[in-house]
Amino acid sequence: MIVDPDLFESMRMELRRGSLVLAVLARLREERYGYTLRQALASDGLEMEESTLYPLLRRLESQGLLTSEWREEEKRKKRFYRLSPMGEAMLSALADEWRGINASLDKIL
Amino acid sequence: MDLIDRYLNAVAAQLPLDERDDIVAELRDLILSRFEAGEDELGRALTDAEKEAILQEIGHPLVVAARYRKGPDALVGPELFPYWLFGVKAGLLVLLAVHAIGLFINLIGGPADAGRAIAQAFHSFFGAGLTLIGAATLAAAIFEHYGIRPTWLTKWRVKDLGAFGLSDPAAWGASVAATDKAKQTWMPRPRKGWPGGEYLFSFLATGVFVLWWVGAIHFPGLFHVGLRGEDAVATGAPIWTTLYGAILFYAVAQMAVDLASLVRPYAVRMRAAAQAVLAGIGLWLTWTIFEAGHWFTLTRDGETARIAGDWVLLDFDRLRAIGDGGRDLVGVASTLSLVMSWAIAIVAISLMFNAVANLWRLVQPERRSAT
Image (cartoon, rainbow over all chains, first blue to last red; front, side, top):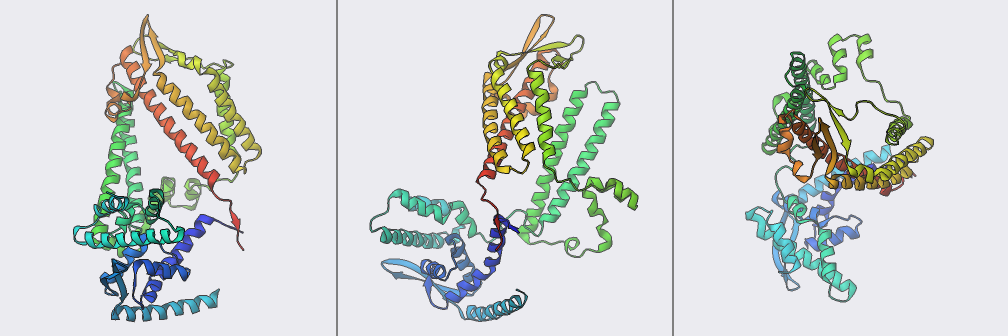
């Protein structure tokens, strides 16, 4: 059977899109700034474009799920992000949902 | 001003004022971090070209800034798009029907100038169509911006859905008659799968052109232009003699490609490569003909007028006034000059699309099997 590569790529991106928010929240249990967060996600096998990651961080912060702070490190001011208490609760709820979806899909697949 | 400042200035100009400094400071840190990582990897300072490559990876300033926008990403979002598309299709079909009926009544009512009536109908249809599309898009953009969802979008009933089938004109007869027999007559049939039909038609049509070009067949009256009173005769300009061999080669090459495609209709890449080359040759021919500037000469009773054109004629105001040309020899030549200039321009654009589409087919990766 033939798999159209363009269609596969578009469906793969769709599949990944929702999980990236969960990955970002999970990685920010530990404080990080944008560049190191992206590196951490990449080392987990979750490559993410900067032009997607940085606006996502701002959106999550405006939703109250992250807190941020400008601080100097390596002679340069950097913006550090970490999970807010509301973010921790949201991460826990989303992780439960994710495991539920995984379990359901595992039964089907 | 260095590369980073120039890049960040371009991003900053697209950002809302209250967040601009904050976002730019964060992007600056990101860019510097990327530069430092590159320098660590190479063990030397980055060249300007390497820095620019990193900025290109981060994204075009317009795209990067757009990701920070808080409003909707599209004028017509995915939720509204089906309604927008239906509205536009249905509206255009209604406009087409109204204009066709208007033109028909105008023509059978004994018009002074049928050509002008047709030109005005086209002009009016395209103007009204563009206005309709613009109005529908504006309405959708307002709905998107303010998050409006009228109740007729959200609370619909099955018994009200009959009208939605009317956006397909092939279903109009079936919808009116509503019997199975009528539906069988009016509903469109699925297309047959053999792709060779298209190539056969192209082969035969080009073959007729080649026979006419070499003088083997004639179309009486082809070069006679009807004027009030005596007809004028059109004779070709020297450019056609100059390009005689090139045009013949182009047409014969097209026939050869069609023939090869008929023999191997599924050799898509072979046809794409040949069509891309032919489109390139076609573009060169079109350009040469356009640049020649003089295409035909109209003659009547010893009086002559040139059918000729240049870039000046490719102007929408002139196109809108196409029906205003006189019916004397000079007026007709002037109208034909305008028509030919636009026809050549449209052919050139279509050849460009043809070339790009075929090149795209060539660079598409091979389809692979699922594991």
